[in-house]
View 1 (tube, helix red, strand yellow):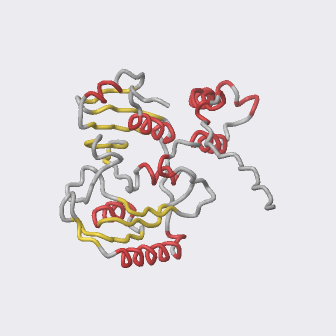
View 2: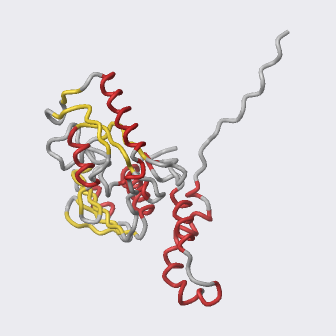
View 3: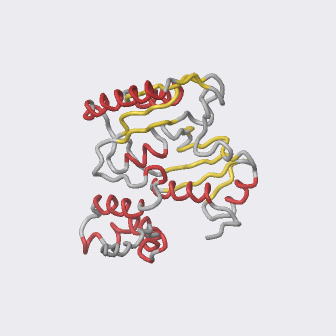
Length: 257
């Protein structure tokens, strides 16, 4: 008689660190602590150490890094595959920033951002862990946006834009070979790349295609309605920006478990 099958191991379920009392305590009070530390605590405990903010930022980043989830300082480089240009680019194939159905424009510190640009979400999320972006693939507009800002990132142009919905594309085998070759070159040049600094404060502006989301967000404390379609959010850290962005994209009144 065959041996019985071993008992099934439990299925891993991601934890929700944001729901813990410790996370809320740190998230809600860290900035206040930093502003009063020198006056109230430095004499007894010594000067504020920069490593404290670095460690806390990594703790707060857990679970809110969106497409960069899982990245940390053990990575040597970030490679972006299959990216597109910003929503305000009139020539890019499927050009959008985060959601083409939702946003007409997204600005960070007054500058339009693309998901692949130097001051964009993913690059900054990588940069706050000291990880540089070294390569990007996509259409010529996406690659051009990145190279215009970084100057030295390796780019693999695997399609040429014709219209918003149409492109002249390479066959899969050729695309894969080009992506592999550019990645190999980027890794060989690793010392040439620098991470994007994640230094605040930050100002995020979301311009929606409809006016109701901007109106609703303006009811939240700290959110400023810039015009009929635009809401502005200010934050000291990029973790706060990412969390707010996730909320603004995902929240729906009818959400259920």
